[in-house]
Amino acid sequence: AIRMTQSPSSLSASTGDRVTITCRASQGISSYLAWYQQKPGKAPKLLIYAASTLQSGVPSRFSGSGSGTDFTLTISCLQSEDFATYYCQQYYSTWTFGQGTKVEIK
Amino acid sequence: EVQLLESGGGLVQPGGSLRLSCAASGFTFSSYAMSWVRQAPGKGLEWVSAISGSGGSTYYADSVKGRFTISRDNSKNTLYLQMNSLRAEDTAVYYCAKSCSSTSCYTGENWFDPWGQGTLVTVSS
Image 1: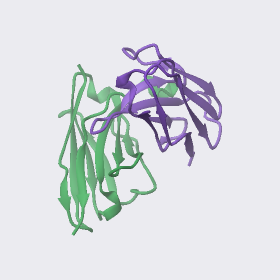
Image 2: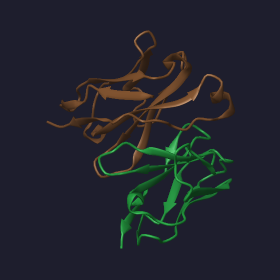
Image 3: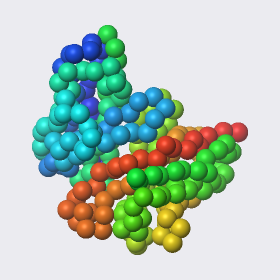
Image 4: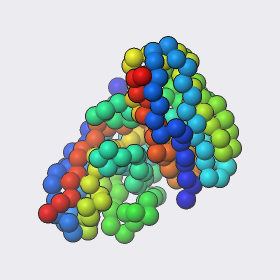
């Protein structure tokens, strides 16, 4: 099974900061990668698919990049509503999620 | 608007069974693959099972293979997860999620969107 490793597991940031989360696959997955945002008590929400394509309705401050084994999610200017946990997911071979990155208020 | 509504969760003893349902609306249900994903309390997301739009193909995580069965009734726009031989480690919120269409599956567009609100399964004596 393909393993997905996110880093960091958590981070503290302030509103307006630029935040970058990385996700590494245990084998090449081309661009078959999605990013989700989850807030406490809520279902995950799709942010990005195909590694870099923004889902409709998602603010442009979110962006994704990478291919193969290394991927990044960037929030260019952190807003209060962005404090949440973020998960990467590969869908190259069945499905596997990273362990999550919790973005907390500094 | 696409809506997914899970039901059927609850408290069950170890070794027991439970059937979850996911009622879908707002899209042509039979044209889309569907998945179940779970999240143990305070933990991350774990894909559990998936089924093609026709129901002819099913997939399972190793952790549930042989114990869980995914199915769907396209006439009722409903997805199911039959869970048998439940263990304490199956305790989680279970989400259903819409995946790829009968055409987009072939191009690998297998992300999940949207997700239901989830139903809690607690396995405890």
